[in-house]
Image (cartoon, rainbow, N blue to C red; front, top):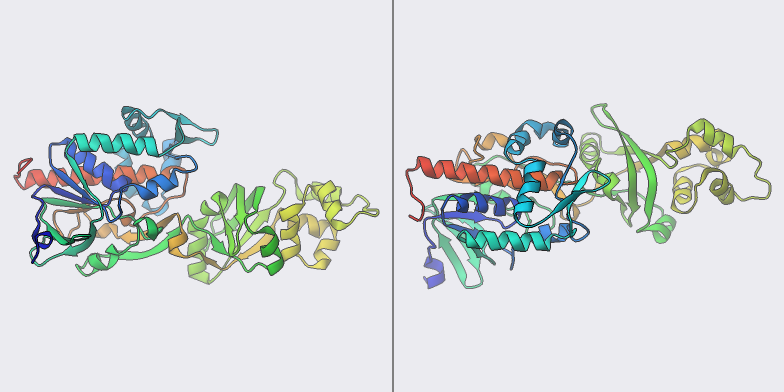
Length: 422
């Protein structure tokens, strides 16, 4: 056995996963005086965090507490417990302590003043290292050996690590190229931990476009529209905003906001149907009246543009799903503009999704987020079975869960009558 295979870094705390949840757990534990080794499979930590913030880091949301909690759906109660200790206001104060000023945008979303993730991550890592956190990159977790030591694959070979407590914060199953590949699912199931299948969340969906529409409009945003959808349980939803036509179907913020019920409906019934309102500011009656004006020598395309403000990709969508008979009647055309049916076939693959649903079942962890079957091992972030839409809700809950797991680890260490640095 070579030196790398027999190495033991000590009996402090191991945090596995260098995303927001893992970094927050490391902050809480190191702040109490415990030595922390932070392991990540990638060459550097926070890669998904940095990529997510490339277009403007959405830290959290400013909406009222009850509405904020509603974003977590059936996991409102569990996530709400994490947010009691670290909600949107606490997150903004925490960022301010790192020297990152924040502001509330017109949509209610909260951003750093510089709109970038890198300054926050740099300041955070500087504080963590000053508190005694050792970052060990290129360490891919392989599970445990027969003695309970943690196993890691490194460029120098396999390394084994003993720890007084372990926090797992390995992310979900989306964006595998950035480290969240879901490989931990098999490792935990082998230990008897209940793990719900990982599924795409905040994702795009397949639509059977014609080649004509794909070739002309893939990558084109469809702006100022509203989407209505009736879930498999009968509950209606309506959202306004924009989405993007892709080669395979549809994606974008408006689609992501409905991705959970859309995905669940497809799983339950095999398909889902969206109703797209291409002119949210007009009533069907007003549209029918406007369209009833004589066309004269105008083509249908010019008539739609002049009388209904429908052209470009919106006109193409109408032609994609309407029959010639429907396009010929003013009332039927107006009804289609207000509720264009778009059949949705399937969510895009997990690795393309912004985040994932599923994960470690809440029945498998206690109130401290410790695995019941693996005492001393805690879980945080997307590994747990919850999901949320984009808009700051994902990041807020990941950070809050990391904080909760960190405090849980400290309580475990205290109950084990251990002392910092031992």
